[in-house]
Image 1: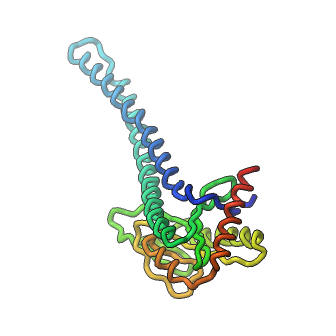
Image 2: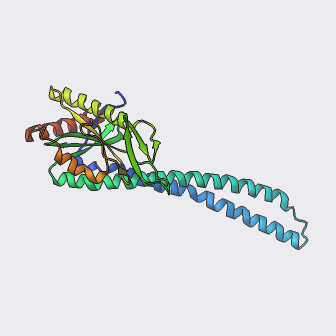
Image 3: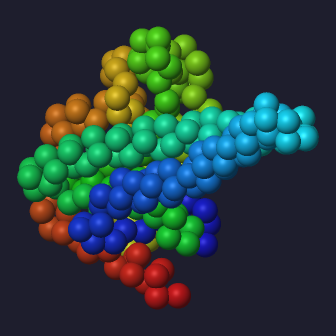
Amino acid sequence: MAEDEHALIEGQFWNEPANSLEARIEASKEALVPYYYMPVGLLLMVIYEWLRLVHKYQPQPMPITLLILVVIFFCALKVVRTRGEIRTLEARRDGERQVDEQIRRLQSAEAAVLPAFQGEGTPAGRVVISAHGIFFLETVTPVRAKRGRGTITVKDGRVYADGTEIPDDPIGKARRRAQSLCELLSRSEGGNIPVRPVVLFPGWSVEAQGAGEQVWVLEPGTLPAAVAGAPMALSEAQVCQATFQLTRSIRTIQSF
């Protein structure tokens, strides 16, 4: 199966991204524990050796001191890197939770919201199916600098966070995944069913795009209004049929 091949499962699992990130955060925090306790143990050994020196017990503190310095450096490096990873995961988790809040609003407006997957069940965004059309949601959560303005801008199809270009081309990625979903749905429905890609930036202020943009770049809070403001595109029967077909697709894939 192609990497961007998508399918959907039933809506009770649409908040799985936040839960998955929460588990990864807890695992990363647990991995830090040995790196806190190891330097403490070695520090006690150093203190013991220096006490022997003071009391003339023929100590040899220099080797153990060098050892503790090496261990402390290694542990500090590991802690800094892991804390950075935790910060990134926490930003992603909090972002997914913000998106979840807006998804509840969409569901209350009678939209179907389903998670999307790529490859062999790898989470890859969400899909909104409503009378206003089908939307593929891609959530991007860059870590904000402490002194940054927190502004997302789009220029010539590229996305910038506080003036720095975001890697991995989020607009292009969302467009490709939406196209894969469109092809999958079209094969099932026997016609061309357009899917609009949407890139969400939780926790950031997104500058308004020009009218007529194919890919929406939004703050999560503006998503319900954007969907509601889109022209009517699907009948009630088409919404039900699309939801059924996409749900059946993931079940077929998971059966292999």
